[in-house]
Length: 447
Ligand SMILES: Cc1cc2nc3c(=O)[nH]c(=O)nc-3n(C[C@H](O)[C@H](O)[C@H](O)COP(=O)(O)OP(=O)(O)OC[C@H]3O[C@@H](n4cnc5c(N)ncnc54)[C@H](O)[C@@H]3O)c2cc1C
Image (cartoon, rainbow, N blue to C red; front, side, top):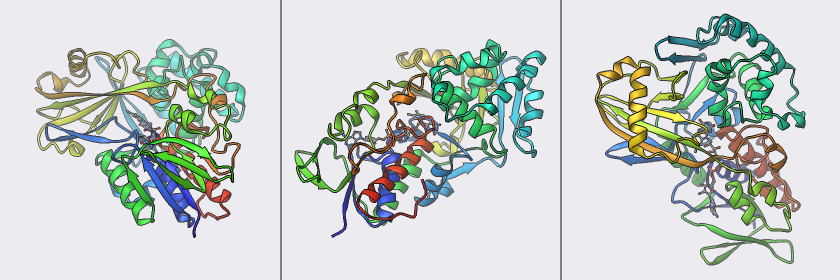
């Protein structure tokens, strides 16, 4: 009989791990506490419209996530810009575009940054110093994680307004902290891999349908087609090691035997579930912390934003996306305002957020001044990511534990990436590969 791998958690990491193991010929069971797959990426219906819990974006350099999307048959549900082009709006000062040209990296951004009107001439001239510094950084140097990106930028002549008008536009949505708090190690990785490695690396992609459809439903279909026994609404309360080395999971008051397990749950749950024999030091990742992301979903009676998405400077509106089609709205426009590093907003009542942000959106988009707001909804993800501050690197474990058949996966594990969909899929692929190796099976899936 084939060896049995049990994957706990049906987020992107767990789905990727389960597919890797099933593709290698293992018998796979996936246990997910919720009644759907997709984990931190999901959708819900309100007043006849569909909303994602939070806008999700990926870049062309997210190769593992894009391969996963292909694998689950969801590529038709994902759009990718032909070339990076971001309209950045400062109310009262118009739009500046961050665009790439056809030149090789890093020259592909030279023209756009050289004329970026939300920075002064002096600030634009100073950018070169930081960009050259970034190119010289060695991402393998663990000491980078002792510093904030903000301190590093300031030491290279970047002003407060450069941080706000340029660097934080990228750092906040990718590391979920402002530069002043983000680990240099992770922020530098984003710029080196996403912007400076290849001219097409930062082209932006996003789902044109809901996340629930693209990840949850397509994921379930693909897992079942691969022979994975997906059990939804099943929470694992305990994982233990049998005297002979086999594994046992406790779920819904019953035991389930496994030859290998992949714990693809958030870090706090993983610290609780991982058997002590596999990781006696799980406390180090139990307190990786959490940072919220808040999304505001605003329904207008007419189009107010003339772009598929835009970023804001000099306004609390960080990023805003047109979700009209995905929402199923037939007239008017549905916008999703994404607020990362949202400690200041996570506890604010909906009415107060509505008052503040409807007024802000009218500053950002002049057409919104005449428009009626037909609906305003807030999604608050209090534990959207772990806190990606200095010191977090040493707390992120790799996929392997002291037991070869107990593996860890999740965007919070040490993938070299920030806590993103790409990190989640990479971690799942790697954990799956180690699981099948531990069982003596082989794989054709690359890490
Ligand atoms: C609002 C928001 C916006 C984001 N924006 C972006 C973005 O633009 N780009 C990007 O790349 N990333 C973004 N992210 C991050 C990205 O969504 C996550 O990094 C990624 O989805 C995490 O996947 P995961 O599989 O590691 O964990 P999760 O998705 O958290 O999956 C873990 C799963 O384990 C299950 N589970 C927990 N305990 C148990 C148990 N005891 N038994 C069984 N199951 C259990 C949970 O129910 C969950 O389904 C965003 C996140 C949020 C919340």
